Image 1 (cartoon, rainbow, N blue to C red):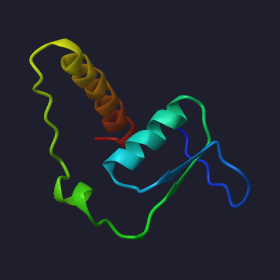
Image 2 (image 1 turned 90 degrees about the vertical axis):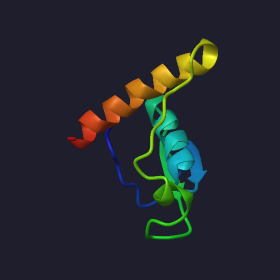
Image 3 (image 1 turned 120 degrees about the vertical axis):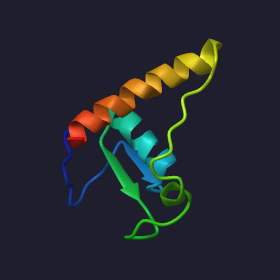
Length: 85
């Protein structure tokens, strides 16, 4: 993923909230080639995402839920590689 800072202009997608759900939506849009801006109410980490930081649980036993979990696992592994850990 390549990050680009735009000082003015338009974006394809605006995401309100920089928690795990908002950042996940932003990542999905970037992966689809969209330009994205993320807007959050705070400059510091607060809320549910920080309270749950580091907790990942991929335990569905079967079916569509397992398919989603395996897809999410690949995304998390890619992000870990990109971040260098």
